[in-house]
Image (cartoon, rainbow, N blue to C red):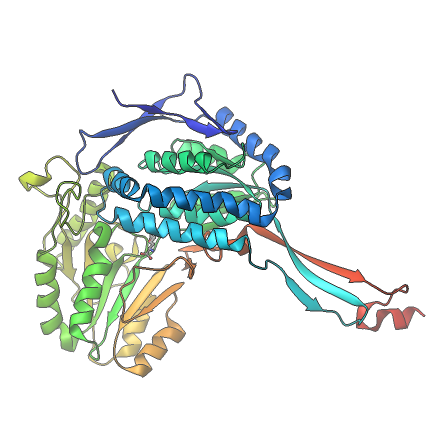
Length: 500
Ligand code: UN1
């Protein structure tokens, strides 16, 4: 019998009576059930939002350094439990990089804790010598945080640690694929002494998330996930002007490899970008835009390296490079795109798909699929839609035609991450000036951002940076304060002169 884990509302572990339930399952070994959770219905979501609303004034009144102390204690707990947390991440979402995820979450929490003792406003010079002017920041109120499964520890902490230090209160809904990681976060925040109602956790599916976003007492939504859901959230918030939304909605990252590239670096960047986390990062590379003159060298080297990728259950084999897809639907989705490529008659260089290997039969494993375009075709769906799996297209461009490489790179509605491998300074600079992405890399893969950099996308990849360092802008209101120290009123722009 799987253990049942309760929601965390108003400082207590509690669950809605009679709610439907779901299971969290290890995607590498589906007989391994991690726990059972409630699909929280709308009334219970309301209870959580009300708890957050009630806690808001008192939390806002706590000093910033003291608010940050809670996060600092959370960091201590994470460090103490690091090994166990890393294993939990791997067990619940299948990726071998459980430890990296935990460390990324710790880093984000450290940044948040530091904010408690850093300046948080600005002094602005007034036109009038006897006036002082300031930009102040205030918390916006109750924030809904909705996170994806692929960074089940780090991304939730990107979404709400800074928000809490800024004085907001939180209702968090983790992905239904990784609820136990969300549960551990709630447990450790509780242990760290977060006051009742400041942080609340509700488990559930899309309907739970919808009830949370649409609750009238929510002031802001921080969301990382698919474009389809992010778009609905933004549309809802646009129609309810007291709510704001920051969404990070995936990508279609391209890696340009020019003829001035260091080939070894290019192969490494391509393998890491395309296949780390089994292609299940929103920043994963799915388009390799390669100068045709280096294809004869690049393609065999890339394919050779890709064939060596070790796929498996990281809890049984510490040397695996990537784990399974998160669930059956994900396998089916990736395979649909693989089939689209096969059916189109494009050159398939590595005919991956659902793995038939005996060591993979207990989980949702796939092997990498690589194809090569003959003629670039922007309407080809596998080049335009986010696949979130190991499906990579090689797109050759005419020798030396860097303009064409850039055009192809930007020829997508997404704009999250992009990279170029080149030792040519001019190409690197052109890329820096013109790549339409929020995260740009030169001589690096499209993955691997650090938390103290802005993280977010352009175009349909999102708005408002719901994560990492720039979250602070989003979770605070900016207020201008002007303070007069004279006994007369002098207005700016010469206005008092006119009325005299
Ligand atoms: C994601 O792409 O889903 O940049 C998040 C990276 C990680 C975060 C990725 N730091 O690869």
